[in-house]
Amino acid sequence: MLLRSAAKLLPQCGAIARGSHQRRCVVSASLAINKDETSQQTLNQSGSRFFSSMPSAPPAQQISAFPSIIIGPDTISPQGSFAEAQASFLEPPMDLVEEMLDKLIELKVGIVAHYYMDVELQGILFAIKKRQMELLQSDTSGKIPKFPLVAIADSLKMGDDAVNMCSQSKVESIICLGVDFMSESVSAILGKNGFSNTPVYRATHKHIGCSLAESAEGLNYKAWLNKSAAGKSKALHVVYINTSLETKATSSSIIPTITCTSSNVLQTILQASAQMGPEELRICYGPDTYMGENLVSLLTAVLESKWSDERIKRDLHPEHDQASIRALRDNTDVYPSGNCVVHHMFGQSVVDTVMNDYSDAYVTAHLEVPGEMFQIALKKSLVDDGVVGSTSNILNFIERKVKEASEKGETKRLKFILGTEAGMVTSIVRSVQEILDSSSSKGVEAEIIFPVSSEAVMGVENDGSESATSSLEVVPGVAGGEGCSTAGGCATCPFMKMNDLDAVQDIVDMIGRSSSGGSDTLQLQLNKHLPPNKLGGKKINGRDAIDLGTEPIVYMREFMQSKKMSDSLVERIEKMAM
Image (cartoon, rainbow, N blue to C red; front, side):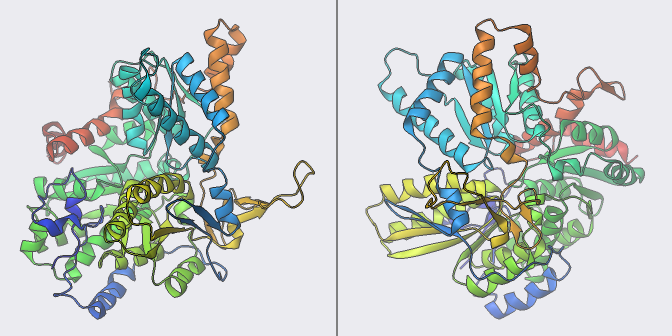
């Protein structure tokens, strides 16, 4: 019986789901292994081959146990100091929630935030959204907006949610909580949808960087693209959505470019290869080195697991077979020098502890994590005990496992290793609680395990403002390490954490004072919170730079809707090869 099949989890995939067993599917990794065809011993042997060349994470110290949060039908129980720090803000004070919601409604302000926000901030944002929807059910005055004024999502959906806030809830300004390229993208998407006059504000006037995005902004990346475009063969640059508009514009001016997300990247390269010829098309993937190498490893796993042509067509892509998958793998060029500081820092001792002490746990890993962590999740995913993919894929996997156990009436604790940014725990807790609350079975618990060492937390000195017996005297992050430890892993993004509750309250108050006829000085101060505008008024090769920067996103959206590369993109690729 077929255990897993990724094409079914991805609605934008070209493959078509057939049969009830197709519901049990891998996320975007899309590796399906037949237990009758492949023994566990074979899995381990083949795994050692295709994992051997994967990129490595830094070494690390020994770790005895990981912190975790245990989620029950009516309880949340943090285990360890790091988990206590994560769990302490899951139930925010309702007076603050009511106050923030009242201001958003009065000032017509919407907030879009990334999954990786600070846990305190996420707790508040979730509660604001929930309270708005509760009030909407009994609202007869029409004062409560119908579309949520708060949205927590991945970087692509943040822009879509901002558009819906403007069109359906008539907001007049957007606060974007993320890194700078996200606010820049949200602003560009609003402009493309007729809301160019709606300002997008960041939580701070300071630069909020991103190690991954910035790895594509230097001369090395441009040189790599120029080299890729220099030949006479067909070439397509597949660029990760988590890059700046400037990177996308520069890339588009050099080589045909389409953006991708961690959810659709596999299907993007499969369709492009099938549509333009796997022997002829060279895929240039960047800037995320780990994700690119992991994609190559996925294709290698398909080949070394000896999938039949029929199975590849059924479960991966209808126009591919063994020969074309091999050609796609061999014709994929991955940028060698880009990584996310969060996913990069899952050290070797973290990996060792997962393998030795958590063999009974489901293992999840974002496609950006280093090879060792990815190895474990990929091996587990082959037998439905893990998942590799995007933040949404990880959330869906956890939800599915909890729901399946609840529906069976089981009494057990499901353990999940969270191989991505710890800020996701807020979304996970809310989703798991909803599933458990709606189930008649009360015997299921979910334990979310943070794969970090003690070095991933730091102590805080008691300044006398709190009781010396306070149970929370550590916070995520390490002194001098920007939130990460080269010795023990990184569970929080230092850049994302520049968005905090105080900063959001300050920017809301500034918007309020400005709308009441604030001074020119106040408006100038507010303008410092606008996204970077490096491309405004500029042209590249005679084209508007912003249009050029959004073109790869348009190509991706067309692919997601039609399941094929757009005619204009194919024409560019073929013209370049002449």
